[in-house]
Image (cartoon, rainbow, N blue to C red; front, side, top):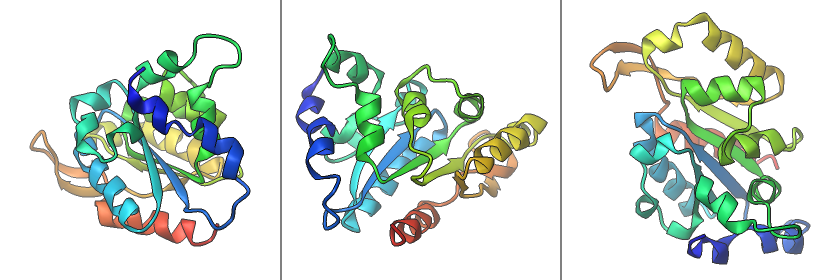
Length: 205
């Protein structure tokens, strides 16, 4: 593993989860939509509001988001970090530690592929493993982002309804001209809207 180990939430989890005076913690899951270019901005805006932030990338998200896009860069985790950290019994299990560490899990953007995985309970990467280990008593916020034709597919409604039935909170997508040139519903909400929704929820915790 890289120098991420020095910023792993593993040691923090057991030390200060009972400290109500600590900063709120948000884990951002970033998936393979072109809207991932806005994820670093969301993270930075939350940091500016005195929120502690970590980011988990799927492999496809790395086409749009590089570790250097976010400071501190050691706060960005990938699938390689999960296996690089664990060598045997007693070693940190990153997806469990991240799920325990965070007060709120924000998935922004949530692409059609990962939406389907979450709705079916699949856990084949770091992000989906965090989601499967997520405490249902803690808030999970998701921000879909996909092409209009994918958004209009009946499965999208089915999958979003499943997530909402578990208490997960939707930040609706918006209509705009998409990267492919089509204009329609499916674009991720603007960073300011997402940060505002997260801040409102954090204010109730």
